[in-house]
Length: 394
Image (cartoon, rainbow, N blue to C red; front, side, top):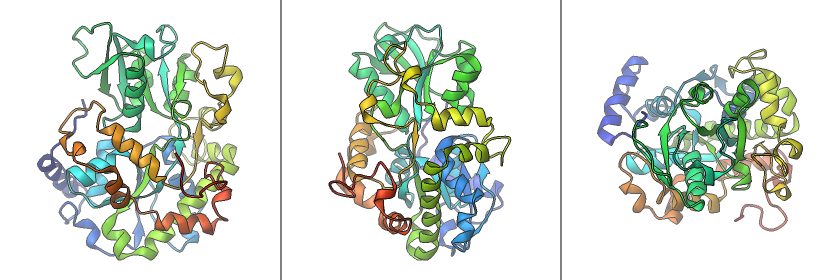
């Protein structure tokens, strides 16, 4: 099981990782160097789409940046540790992860933009009998990481249904009102579900689509139908880079925002580029990726279907969206939810955090605002509310 680690354990593991990667720097020192080459790390999930499309389409190069081929890693722990040892200087992370990194281990990580919105779902076996959160009592549900939007949103649903999330060994019997949560890497979830090892999971795409298409699993609920246009992964860099090399940083964010806009306008082309028959960034077929980018039909997921994955068609949400602006109200809400979400490891530091302080300390929206203007302004993105206050929402 992937457990949270202490600062000392992290430093030891990071030092070992740096040695393995051939880095002579110690943890957190890697970014004292002037960044000349963009080094991207990513998990093979559609959350990484803007970074991958920016690379595939040459947007980073258009900005005058040298960029290496993005490196695929298997788990959030590996991605986080590789980022902190300097192997990567641009990556995507589940928004709660940089909160943990900055305020529990004093890592100089900065959130510069949202990477995408929505893009996740709760998926269950076809024969599970789980049609809603209320049916999860006594069940085993996998999450990709404790510090994840998935864990937060899942527990919101469980508790609203009057059930109790617990974290315990799967062999221990559960009470009827208990839902056992545990960590599985995203790529392992479809096989575990089809093999009856778990009853359901909540995770980023394309693994919900993989289970749908390959094993007949059902989408119980789209997360974007629970929290409209919620953030999930964010774009992060090291604060030492953003402060010492703002031009480098701005160019990187320009390319990412340009990619987000391109994907919203060209979802089919994006699916073709990303898949294993294209540039092979993701180990799935174009068919599966098209389900992710285009598969949000009311006929398949709305009223009359069991489970009903879309309860709010009036929201006109998307299965996966791309909007770069990091709304402060969302960060505030996430912090408050994190403070009451069950996780393994030491979470005492969360209780001391003031959400308004974190909004200003963790997030730097300077670069993304410039990048949004550079592609034509907020009106280019459907999810940015320009009718009221451009950079505010509830």
